[in-house]
Length: 352
Image 1 (tube, rainbow, N blue to C red):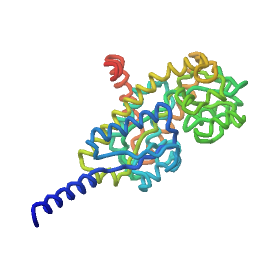
Image 2 (image 1 turned 90 degrees about the horizontal axis):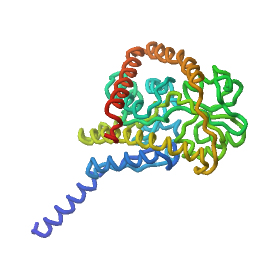
Image 3 (image 1 turned 45 degrees about the horizontal axis):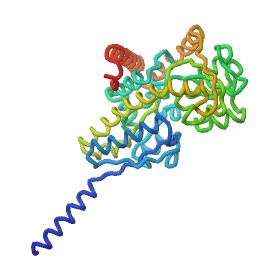
Image 4 (image 1 turned 180 degrees about the vertical axis):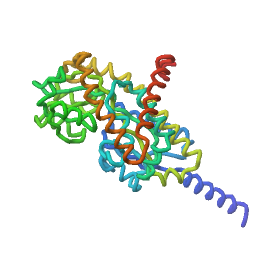
């Protein structure tokens, strides 16, 4: 072979090698491409590409175009998508372990909750085993932030007693607590809440400040009572286990590091957006005016007390399934205390 042909062959081989080195991963999300969570996932994709030197890229499918939230876990486990966002309460039997982040309580700090979840899910062997049974690997975490009560005109909730008789939408254990408090629960995914409030199918939604803007709920709800009640952190990114294991160790580290970075970035966006959105709701700058009222502390205490039996139920069910429910819960509480102390001593990572 002459020199020119040899060089051409080497060039073609190099191009083929570069092409094969680039891995495009299909990512599914059931939510819209707007709001703080969408911004965090775009950041996640950017970090993956940057940290991998362009070897790894995400092809994000928004709005359930590839998989709806209810189908996400099974679809990712089967390889329909390589990775994506999952919500534990939509597949509570398979992701019972992740619903530990949904248990009602007084921890409503997004960064504290997500950092505790990230460390628990990446270090606790039982939690990793539970996800492995669904053929997925944990990558990173979201949170809804704390629950608030947003209601259509004429259905304001100010006290726990006001919940009695209301038609409401909530998810997971919060729906069970509200049902115990006398609400009639209507089951639906979050993308149906706007129409349900507008049509009168529900009176109120146990929702979140950031989703009010993302789903434009301020157009159909005219009051929000700030309960700052727990948060839903059984909400994260998982990856198909086979696909993850096909990556090099360095690429696996990229995925986990990007997931950790995204978790912090999302917390920053959530915390910064919270006050801005509330102010815009109060002033009407968001598009229509919403009356925002903090719930009295004695009423919040009643909400916390109503949720305590469900914490004990979670531990019992995990124990019955052969896992150390008490031990996992105690580790999670220790991690919440750890990150609360770190925040109090050092502030949030982005402000240090």
